[in-house]
Length: 228
Image (cartoon, rainbow, N blue to C red; front, top):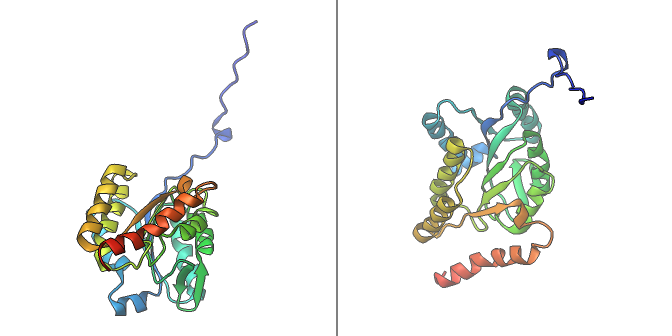
């Protein structure tokens, strides 16, 4: 006898389709302080991106205190759930991020709180966030995260243009072309001395520690070549 075909489930048994992710969540840490220093990259970038991509769902969340952060993130979380890309702007070092005026957290802790948004791309306008240990700590608790773009040295205004271009690429194409990314970041270094690294999950995984350390040493080598 021929095998019996299974009937498709009726509408009552269908699995609910997962809603599409929103496009970009921007977290500007210590927004008043950054504004006073002229470093409010997030709040200056969001209107430009919204004008360029009027149909994309782009949300800006400023932070000041830890007690306000939860409620501030609750609204976009409830409304959209997931965000394909995150941009974090703030003061930091290789160990962690000054998330609010009253709370400095490790990069691993940052990775933990971004997990609920299930991002694929993370952009960091933050000093030393592109070092391998920082990036490894971000990837560890965030299984959805595929790529991190950040500077291994001090982040300054000259590096904002290529970072915006990379974000725009994701908003437009849902991905970043590797060759275009490499060219853009190379030109950024040639023109401004700025350094933006792209890290993929497999590049900081187990067995890649030595290779990652080589990349960590690159900024110092480049600075010596430049005579800085």
